[in-house]
Image 1 (cartoon, rainbow, N blue to C red):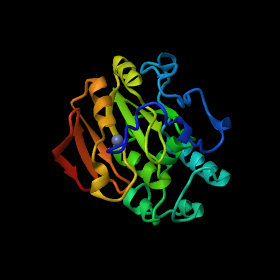
Image 2: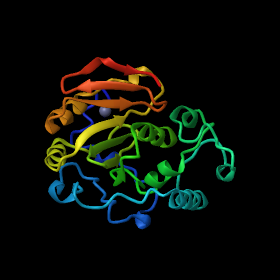
Image 3: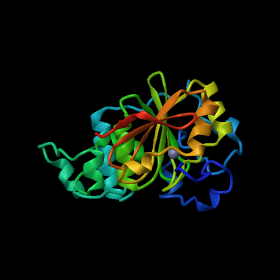
Amino acid sequence: MRAGEASLEAGQVAKAVPVGAATKGTGANVPLNVHGAGVTDQVPNATAAAAPAKGSVSGVAAEQGAATAGKVVRKGAAASDDLAITANPGTGNPTAISRGIGTLNSRQVAVLDRLPGFGSNTIASKSFGQRDLAALTAATGDEFAMFSTGGRRLIYRGNFESVPINQKMAVQLSKQGWRWSSHTHPGFEFGVLRSSPGDHAILRAMGGNQSAIFNSIGQRGIFTSTGDSLNGWKPW
Ligand SMILES: [Zn+2]
């Protein structure tokens, strides 16, 4: 959903490049590879699917498992570094990850593991924040979008230039109580934080006042349904 591109229009499906196998998918991973098709049935219900366990034990297990399987794209330290008792200050930090000196933390890895490719989506607890979303983009180079309701987050994975959410889906999500909290634009400059016409259209369809955009190093921009908000710029 970058500026200048009608990325939310139909016709971009051909660019979808599923990453990883679908064999690991759970019931929560419903591929949404087709713009506008079967929207009603495919949008996760906000009242269904309990948030995943966020215990550190399972998170660490997931991280180790992912590292072993080699399914999670990581830059920087080897997986064995995660076993050190001393905390790595780069862990989970978008800036560090984008510079290749940090790794995703266990919470981030657990979510990414449920988002194997373009159009994948999953529900996480509210402990998964916007900084975590930026970290996923730093690690993968892909765009992600996050919606919130109550104590849950609904996260969609896109590719390097878009997330397959169209206006029809946006209306459906809004009816189910989801608000569009934020999405990411892969890149390392303030310039990539500019919102696109597609971003405005989706926010308008959801009836939202404003939403945030994060780049690969965690810098933030705020936009409304009509354009960028000059008050929203915030470097981490
Ligand atoms: Zn966008």
